[in-house]
Amino acid sequence: MRYFALLSLFSLAALVAGSPVEPDAEGKHWAVLVAGSAGYYNYRHQADVCHAYQILHKHGIPDERIIVFMMDDIAESNENPTKGILINKLNGTDVYHGVVKDYTGEQVTPENFLNVITGNKEAMAGKGSGKVLESGPNDHVFINFVDHGAPGFVAFPRGTLSAKELNSALEKMHTKKMYKQLVFYMEACESGSMFEGDLLPKNRDIFATTAANAHESSYACYYDKLRRTFLGDVYSVKWMEDTDKVGTTEDLQTQFLSVKEETKSSHVMEFGDMKFNTEQIQEFLGGVQGSAIDKQLRRITAPAAIKDYCADKVASPNVPLAILYNRLMDATTEQEKTELRIALSDELSLRNQIADVTAKIVEGANNSDQDMTSEILSTKTQPRDFDCAEAAVHAYSSSCFDVSQVDFAFRQVYALVNMCENENFSKTSILSAIGSVCKS
Image (cartoon, rainbow, N blue to C red; front, side, top):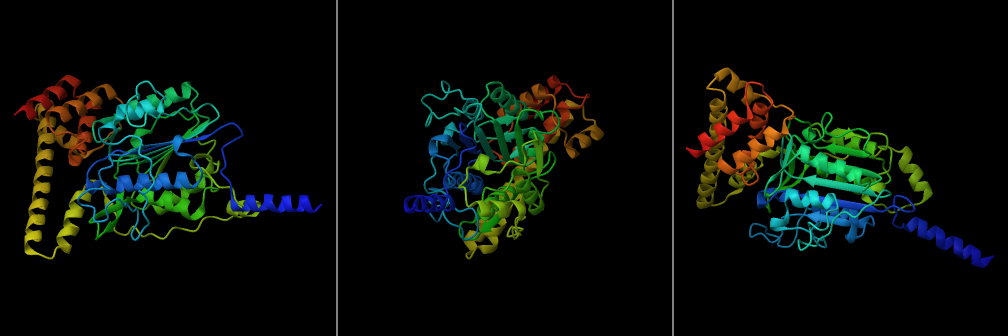
């Protein structure tokens, strides 16, 4: 009797202490985390992804089933006053230490990302860790993408990824039975355009949420005076701080509604298959199973609202300007102030130049119809003609400004998409105008 009593006590202690939970008896957790930007002013993207890694690692997903893409040019940057350390909120703890970086530098590309999520091991041989998703029909997959976006596109340090390419890869994953259920969290401007409408079918066992709808910016927050940059993105901060606070026994829909409520700067959206959004997030982010009483309490108790510490939020396209302005306000010497004023002036001049080039392209493609030009430059359209849009973005990047290198140039993609979706423009006229304007 005493033996069985001790055994029961040990079993209870183990249950309360927690043990890693897999989604079912056979399935496993897999995750792909992507920071698709470069440059110190984009600090927040890599900090977001490192924080996401720490959550997955903490909740029991082993490194061999977490695949991380990040440029890795921030932690040791000369601009970083705390070398080797990244934080994701003001006075936060280091989220960089221990992160296993599978693909860095020039390996952070759309092609490599697509090969990884579709399990193309042969294509990734000799690149980075070589890891790809090797998930199967009983597995749960989590994908988190953080970077800049435009209608129907997201950016990488080299190149862009269209909504068509992304959803074709997700369809391939479904056909290959690479998951039981898949959850996709996307942080980017106009990120809703990556899944809107019929792009992501509702019967593919994929649930996606995005930081913004198809027409608006996502927002950065947590400006740090020491590091002189923004530490996080509002949507990403909200879902991760919710997870840190509540744990992973919360269900997907509860977290979505909480993050939607707390992300007041943009409209958080959901897409795809809603039939499993009552699944606990531990099925995708990993989990440590607490006591039965604790689980019951979490099910019947709504999570407390997260205090809005993101009062300094800034639309993602304006982050470079906001950083320079904040640095100017904090400058203590006349030389530093002069240098920052020049940097601000240069940034504004570059933006004006880019906007002027885009306007000339639109005019050139429609024979200088001013009303049509005004319409194209003042609206945002959901792309459907991806053959035209992808060709136009490629031509603009090759001949005018590289949209993956110059953030404000990426903001011009909307105009290229608008022309492709307007019957008054042809693909030929658009490409011809790009070549003519940017050649001169």
